[in-house]
Amino acid sequence: MTTVYIVPCGLSVLDQLGSKLSAGTSLGTFKKAIDHGKWLDGVNLDDAESVKAAWLDRAAVKAEKAGLAKAVAKRLSAETHSLATRVTSRPSNIAGHVLLLASDTKDGLSAALVIP
Image 1 (cartoon, rainbow, N blue to C red):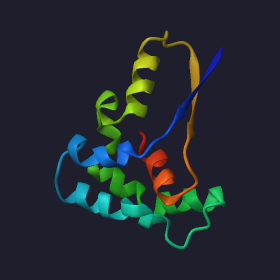
Image 2: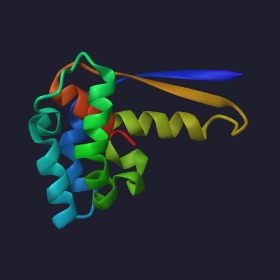
Image 3: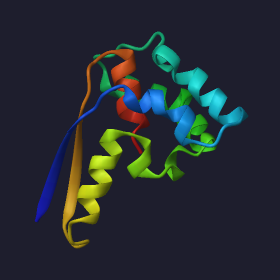
Image 4: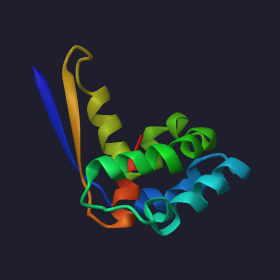
């Protein structure tokens, strides 16, 4: 059985990064890279492969160094809190997929890709 979680993705996750991740140079570097979607400058937002490549080239390593993958999901944002709560309430043998609904703006795409 596969479960699909459909989660609207807002911008609050971007606002929460500074208070939810350890402060330091790595966090500052990551926040600067995603501020107003800078990592998407010059990228065709309608081309999913270009967006993915830009994230991998311009932001993913910075996100890892900032500790995004280690952030406590229930504390990072409403989206990650909902997912973490729902996943822990389900038996572990059920497979699942997450569909994030985000606007096709630089900030919307940034918020969706920041959700670990």
